[in-house]
Length: 236
Image 1 (cartoon, one colour):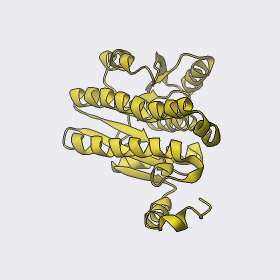
Image 2 (cartoon, one colour; image 1 turned 90 degrees about the horizontal axis):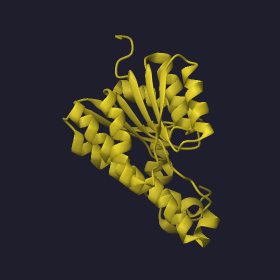
Image 3 (spheres, helix red, strand yellow; image 1 turned 135 degrees about the vertical axis):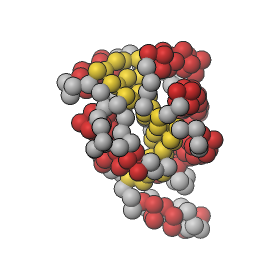
């Protein structure tokens, strides 16, 4: 379709109940997307999400996927690519946690790190290899502005997103020239709909990094250079 350059006809969502992911899927279905795979833990919420997207006219399938069960990623996600090409993978799963609680419970903190980073590394590499094998496609990774600089109020979550962000940037460099496009999305305090709009624009432009809202690029560039003693006193 000439009026929708860069937008996918087929979409695989890792984190099929994510509000941002579903807002993005709805927007893409309204433009061009006709086939969607929602990957997540089997649940009524996942089935409701699938039904919602079917109501928009898409052919929607659910895929059993657990970010923490990295041994299963190859088989679970491989089944999707075995059925047909996938134009876009949206890596949208993650846990924010509760900073105060997680500081007292190292096991909970580790679960956040394993989900947001280790699970994402595994799923990212599996899907990137599949996209490379088919010779085209986009991998869109939902990072966070929280990963730009650790803050007292959410440094466990922020550190896991920092790792994910660095991984995704490196993966994009590794795949440059292969036909696979990697785009890192860094939302701040915004709405799922705003992120979905930014993802669409980024796909059309084949951007490598997208900030939501865009003004955060300048704000975070300044905050990165604020002395630590001053930064810890800022209300951020």
